[in-house]
Structures are given as structure tokens and as C-alpha cells.
Length: 243
Picture (cartoon, one colour):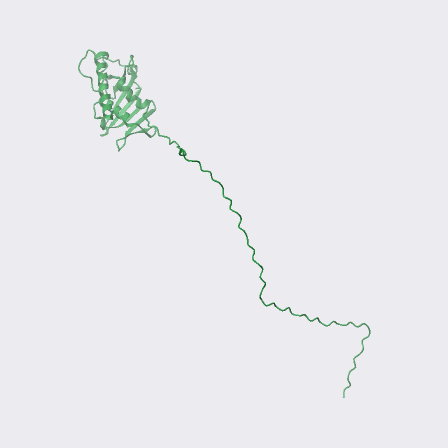
């Protein structure tokens, strides 16, 4: 089933539920006529959806690639198809009006609201929807458009897909790479590696060859004369007579 077919079925289902609520259950049972339009816009023109509950906020923004991304509370990749279904529900929102509501908005969970849904369009205009408590039978939500006094009753089949963007964001999990090992092909023998011993190289001795060089003559040393030591009175040497 294609995404466009899914969206079309969701819209048809939402209109059928709204019509059943109006004519059979809701306060418009005896009023007749079509359902009041709470929001009427082109779903493709929705660029940003902000949902606030207390001090917590979730923001979805359409990128320049026309892909929805979560911007707050942190950036995340989301399933754009889930956001597109919510934009269709929000852009053609019809719901029966609560007849003769009491003046105390807190009775309906609208002061303060349980959820605040702010829609931003391509022309930077915004629409703010205030979601209150569920109805006593649990089949709808009290809803008020900011700046208006009317209180509507939105079927849960329309309210839940929108509020679930806050309660259960459609974050796409990042796949964790799985390590795969390639098994040894079946039928192939296991190779056994046998170490090869390399013997030490054999040394061949070189035969002795006599030297043919002319031997150098060794000089003969002549001993010095020994000195004679005479002990006693030396004999005077005669002096020749002069003439």
C-alpha cells in the first residue's frame, strides 16, 4: 500500500469518526448540518509543528529536502510518514462544538492546557491549538483554538496521532553495524603449514699456499766493546820533551 493511499484512508476514517460522533454521540446530535471547521489549510504548507506540555517541548521541522526532522529537545531523524499523517489531520480538522460550556476552563483541562500544539505554515502564519482533558467517556479531547472562545470535542482517533508526536516521537533508530565473519568454504581441505628447516651453510677450507714473496734480511747486530775497569794507581803517561 502506497503512502498516499494510507494518508487518504486516514483522512476518510477521521471524517467518518467525526461524523459518527456528531450525529450519534456528540452534542451536535440534534443540531444537524456539517461539522464546524477548526483548522482548514493545505497540509503541504505546514512547515513546523511544536507541541508543549508544561516545561517540555518537542519540535518538528521540515527540511529543504521536504523531509521532517526533530529539532528539539535534540536533533533526530524521524519517520516522515507519521508526521505527514498528523499534518493531514491537523490541516482539515473538523470537530463538533461543545454546547453551552461552563465558564471554568480548568474543568476541561484547558486552563492551563494539557498540550499546546502550534502549527507554522510556509507563509510564517501560525495556528495554536489547546488540548485539554479527555471527555468523561474517553472518546474525545476537549480542544480550544487560541484566541477563540469556542470549545470543541475532537475524537481520540484524530487527537491521539497528533499528541503521540509528543508522547511517542517516531524517532528512527540508528542501525548498529553487525560484525560478520566469512566462514571457511565447505568442502575445502584445511591447509597445514609445515615449517621448512634451512641448514646452516657448509664452510669449505681454503688450502694453504706458501708465500712466494722475497724474505727480508734480518740485520746483524755488532756488539759494542766492553770497557775495562782498572783498580789501583794509574800509570802516568810520559809527556814528550819539547825541542
